[in-house]
Length: 397
Image (cartoon, rainbow, N blue to C red; front, top):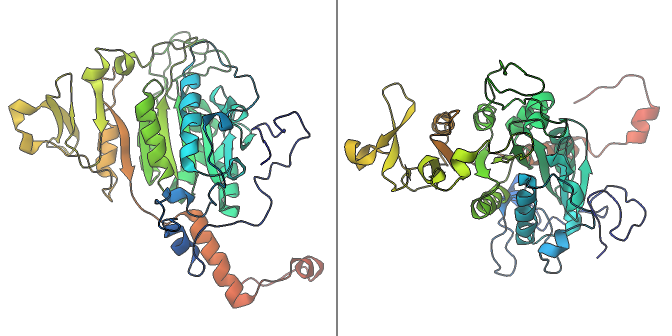
């Protein structure tokens, strides 16, 4: 199998490749017959084998077993010392063999920013694209190539400022892509300006008297855009980060994952209340579907709805366990997940992490393929050359 690095060059320094992630005919790995959505719903098990992640049911399995080293490119990893991106990259590379797909069927697309260097360091196909447009490029690729697993790497500035429009439409369309948003609450690549997630009053080079902007809450934004999968994790919690990546891969449609990522140069310890020993045990609310929500150093606290419909943190012994919530990530209505996301505060006193929402919804690429198949059955495949050389006007439908 040929080596292919994320910058589009052979691992041994050969000529650039075309950027196509396996130009042969797609091997869907799904049963013949039925609609695209029905084939996608197939669990991908072969010969009684284990169930494959839901997003990979149309991606052919690898012919050989891969390990972490196989997903490391020959490029020098270049971030600032201590950057949280190192931890995320290491966890991502260690997780990728679990997908059991060939590197040629994995594509990583990024925008602009520190986080967006990640595709260079993964030995797969990929694209370091333009500012804010990674979701749009990934949408086109995933819609046209069902044999690929497409991952988007972005940051708080790239995704929520210039890329905000592309992000929300990818989420609402539910394209079968995975979006990892590295949130360090600062512009790092351009040397320390405030970002769309910087807290109000943040003093930076571009806000010497403090930011006046109200920051975005990425999880709330994703839920408001009707994302079918929304999660949050932390760069330094490798076990949790890997678990969230695994859950994202097992979701067919857009999976949005916010990752708290420390920038030691321009915004060090921005997430200290949820990463420092002693503080994190008190402040972090770990969400597990079907499990009672408990947090605090002794797990004595929980959540309940107040009279106005928002969530509040309470002492379990004082209010009674029967009034406390059990987490339901599969609730069809996003209002509960949104209420969880509003527990966030500038001091991180009650910070949920884990999967907020995971609900089934037809993916855009499956629906598009079905629509095209239906049109071809009704109108035949058509002749593009005749269309281009024909009349100046034509009738559609």
